[in-house]
Image 1 (cartoon, rainbow, N blue to C red):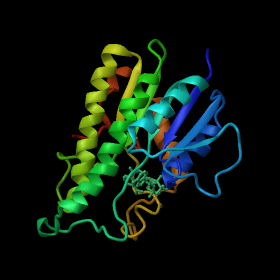
Image 2 (image 1 turned 45 degrees about the vertical axis):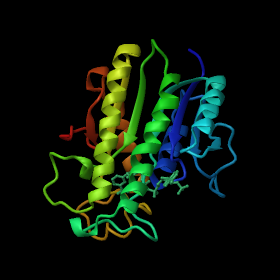
Image 3 (image 1 turned 90 degrees about the horizontal axis):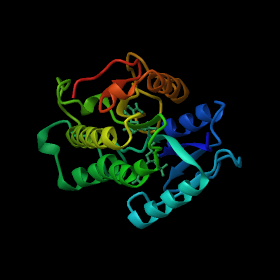
Image 4 (image 1 turned 30 degrees about the vertical axis):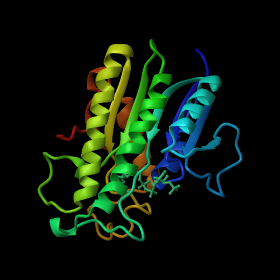
Length: 240
Ligand SMILES: NC(=O)c1ccc[n+]([C@@H]2O[C@H](COP(=O)([O-])OP(=O)(O)OC[C@H]3O[C@@H](n4cnc5c(N)ncnc54)[C@H](OP(=O)(O)O)[C@@H]3O)[C@@H](O)[C@H]2O)c1
């Protein structure tokens, strides 16, 4: 079999880093490639886990990334772990009165548009006749059917839109790459910078490594018939 590559987009984040570390410990990958907008200063110098810095909103840069990856091997796993919930100027809404165009644009850019552009440029790298997996880290709060609390309007909406892009991508892959699995995943509440202000007393708070392990196990149990679905860290399907 040719050189198998695992790609983790958003590798600088809490979950992204944990995915890279877990995958690097698995045999079978010729490289586990971290991708993100900036290489963290403390990224390890290991030729098996290089970090490729790319502006994820720049399609020329993404096309160039695709060319580089094609030269290195065959991508059989693509994980997209970028995401945004809050930052200095951005607080999740508690009511419709707090909704703003600026916050919606920002969250859709990071949570929906970046993963969509990554899919556009990197999904064509998947092999046509071997098993392969694409997973985007979504969030249960992006489920419309499961929304009983409201709040976090723009984050929820941007993840619901991501879920739709994943579903569209999965349907296209079914025709061209019938052995591929393409899904949205909910990681649970994970101790990262993203959840820090809101995860003070969740029922369960996973370490990034624990969450990565559970999500990789979930992915290993999915079949092409599951493609286009939305799954939690325990393997259970989540309603759209
Ligand atoms: N943590 C949780 O409890 C939880 C729960 C449900 C869902 N999720 C989802 O899990 C995924 C991973 O989140 P995390 O918890 O690992 O958060 P995190 O530690 O804050 O990581 C976020 C990642 O997204 C990247 N990112 C943010 N804005 C970006 C931009 N404008 N351009 C390019 N990259 C950008 C960050 O890159 P930089 O390092 O360059 O900023 C980082 O790699 C997200 O999709 C999140 O919505 C997390």
